[in-house]
Structure formats: structure tokens, C-alpha cells
Image 1: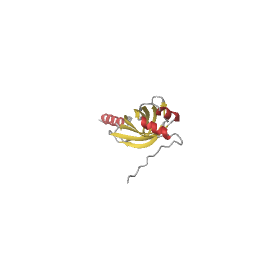
Image 2 (image 1 turned 90 degrees about the vertical axis):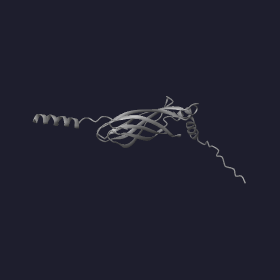
Image 3 (image 1 turned 90 degrees about the horizontal axis):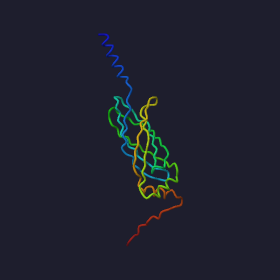
Image 4 (image 1 turned 60 degrees about the horizontal axis):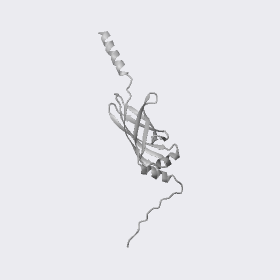
Length: 170
């Protein structure tokens, strides 16, 4: 009887101290909010599911974009702690401003005659200070040609656009 109780206690102890499973990250969307001479504002949206019976938290997000398969934007890291409840999918929306690594890329992209495709690769770091895991994600999409052209025009010093003045009729 004592041996059975000891065995049950050992099984309970081992299962209670089991290593937590990493959350799953499912990329959903990357939406371009703005394009400017400084960079591109993108909202990254991923769904995180915590398979564990304890609450975890997403600590930070990194992202690096490549435009048209050849132009890299600077890598961005955003610290944004978000609670991941147990066994529940949680939608994470993280705004990122990705600066241009090379200003000439904006001019080259503005001369394209089509929308500009992009790929964002990054990591979501989940856990605490001493124990955490980084989970990769990848998203793709396109940037409207008009957004790229408008940003390129704003980057040219001294260039101004005429503003139409409404006429008044008596």
C-alpha cells in the first residue's frame, strides 16, 4: 500500500513539473498602414495559442521586411507584453515602423509599374526573463504603387504640390 501511494505521488510530481510546451503562432496578416520617406508602418497580426494549463506572456516581437525580393528594411524589435491565457487562441496585433535601410530603394520601387510585394520574417518571444522561447513567423503581401510614389515624392526636398483652391460662385 505504501509503495502504491509512493508511486502515485511520484507520477503526480513528475506530471506537475513537466516542461511547458511552446505556444503556436499562426501568421494572419501584415497590413501596411503608411509609407513615408522615413519607412513603412506595418501592423503585424498573428494568432498565438498557449497549449499549457498556466498563463504565459508574449514579451517581444521582431520583424524584418524585404521588398520586391531585394530591398531590405531595418530589423525592428517591439517590446509589448501580452498575456496568453491557457488553451485559448489570442489575436496579437503589433504595429511596427520599419525604417528604410537604403533611401535609394524608395526611388527604385517608385519607378516600378506594379504593386510592390513584401515578406516579413520575425520572431515572437514568449516567456519570462529567465525562461523563454522564440517562435518564428512569416507574412507576405503587397504595397500599392501609389503609396510608394507618394512617399518618394515627399522625400524630394523643395518639391511642393499645388493645392487646388475652391472657387466661389455668386
